Image (tube, rainbow over all chains, first blue to last red; front, side, top):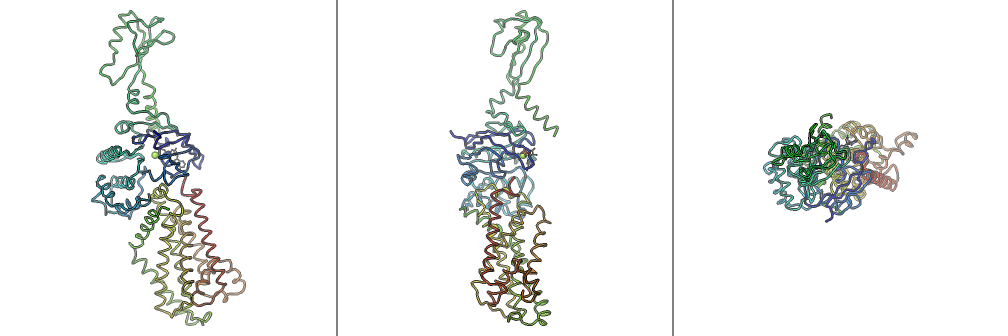
Length: 310
Length: 253
Ligand SMILES: Nc1ncnc2c1ncn2[C@@H]1O[C@H](COP(=O)(O)OP(=O)(O)O)[C@@H](O)[C@H]1O
Ligand SMILES: [Mg+2]
């Protein structure tokens, strides 16, 4: 199947000369929920802005629903709904009017029933005649989501939707996203919380310094994340693994000085006790033990460190 | 053509206007009345007829132009500046609309408001002086073209401006002097020759002159040249707006 959003070799250099996207490739499948995970300044907003048309790409292409977002921008953009990171609403407009405006901008005829459904789903119905400046921050964010859904988009972008958002809204939002998924709507959200990506996404993409480091199915990613390696240094090097110890998770280093055991920290049992017993049964003397996280965990720890430094 | 988008922008902008209708109505009526009291009655009684019409009647076309130009500029510049100020411009930038549809919505609404003000002033003026309109069709054409071109000009200013001060700067420093020196309150022929020549470089002279011709049949410059001047100004503004959206100048990173 052709991806609903196809980003190829996308580059963005801002006027000041800063390169915010360094050749991004990303294929997003129809109906999936993709979380873009990355620290502040990674380029998440720039990527979304360039796909949606707020910023112009320096190089590369974006296709939405098969339509180029520059040469065929009408058909490409008609498919998109965007909830921006920063709250931006015209203060004197009523909720109903501002949501209607978005629908009109996207070229859709008036449809009060659809707007009513969207507003009710987001618990905004009783606020429909309120001016946006009278609303709380959380309510404003709901209005932004309602605007993005006003024209029934096929692809929804949520840029850091839960930053500073209360529990109720977060729950309503995930409920909405799940319902949209049932209708075949694709959702792309950005976050810098791995827990959030884990909770809602089908696939997770990690972005850092304008580069996509990896995009992976959530389950696979979580399994890889949970893996650790136990290194057992031996007093005497051995030429081969003793037959009694042979298994998928155990290997010998090239010089024969150590054994590497890979295990899953979330499993019921790690198998370490059994391994150590088997080692002494085999008569191998241990000099030292150490554990390391999988490379992926390192990435995330790195992300968090950058975050703290910022 | 995304007609729904044009209408959505236009309706939104007009609703903003209707929310402050009383204010939009009272201020031109009041200022026009004041002009008549000061210029028409106090000064006008000492000035003889100009080009065969009473001074009070003579200044009506100029007064209308003065208000229409300043209103068109301030309406249009604010209309496009404010969404950039609040950040809501993102919606227009991501919607499936081209530059012409955006312009039709915003500039169309600003021009409509300016036209409304122009008609209100015309009505107010009719209470003070006897008006005659020799060429009503030309009068309407000049009025509509002026509303449109100056709204376009205001739209450009609104995109260019980075803050509220800049938004006021061009109207204050350039437009107001040009309009006041544009023959609204006098005939160019009343000036010394040097100033007559200088005035020919003021585009507003052509507008006021053509507009006044449509009332009384007398003009400072041939009416054909007036029409060409305003059509040229409109085209120039349209080209600039086209270029802005083409290059993303000041609106897209
Ligand atoms: N308009 C701009 N001009 C120059 N640099 C920018 C602009 N917008 C963002 N940047 C820079 O681009 C990088 C990526 O920003 P952004 O896409 O907002 O990251 P994220 O959304 O992941 O936090 C940051 O270093 C930021 O400073
Ligand atoms: Mg961001």
